[in-house]
Length: 416
Image (tube, rainbow, N blue to C red):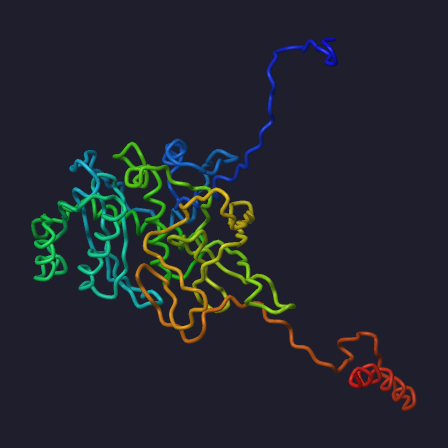
């Protein structure tokens, strides 16, 4: 005894063992959240990003349907990726290419997409277009966004000989901005291989996500946009860090990953519903929103894209549904729940709603978060099928007495 304290001799190591529990999730869920990337790429990601979900099981030999539908090839062609970086810093060299036209139009009428890839970091930005002539407009937007974010200037751009890149207006703009244009030899797409392979990776990942949850093809732009968001936050074969960290000098935050197309229930604000209205609407996850700690979801009942903060998702696994919940708190101040260039509608907006990158789709009615659950029709009359205890009778007096018993409560209620 030392004063008022007793000294005890411990048995074994004098170490306090703290039991810690960390939430582990099925590999099938994590695999789908990360756009169906290989397990080897997931292992690399564990040290390159924060909030990477831990898995409870090792990958099995089972076949992923999404990967089969989205990635299966006829032969084992070599990817022959470029193992060296041809630039000295971010924005020194930009690779660009247009993909399309897609057979299915987006709800906003887009059939093309243009990509801009930074050679140094492999960071990719995607814009969606209705026609190829919009490439110059999208490049101006890309230039402004990336130069403001990095404090650096674009020095060179490499593309094929498509008319959207060789037109007079595009040449004049590059000349004014002192940007050198490197073009490939005609009919030699291999010289623009980085952009070609990136487009293939984006489409393959998007296709996997669409088929994994059975999402309609018209939402291909949302899937491609989410693919770009993921690719910017996972390791690649060239850089030792993720593209996001190279550009923004901080590790990406992945704790809010969700499976594309997952079913869920989005919260309806009190201001948007009455006392007895449902407090949630059925939705499906479509991606991440720029500058907002929320998710892009499709309202199943109305077909509108909404931005929600509090939502519960049911993510499909090989053994059933995996429920996850997002409370929407901002305690940690994380900013990394965002896809590039997707904007949310302002409060009370009634004319337009942004659905895709820089694409505004006119609506026919007010943007609302009203519930998708329609209450069953009600009727004041009590019928035999509803009471289930009224039997038919042939006695006129008995029938009249039953009729009075049924009608009386309703009649009393009308005298208030």
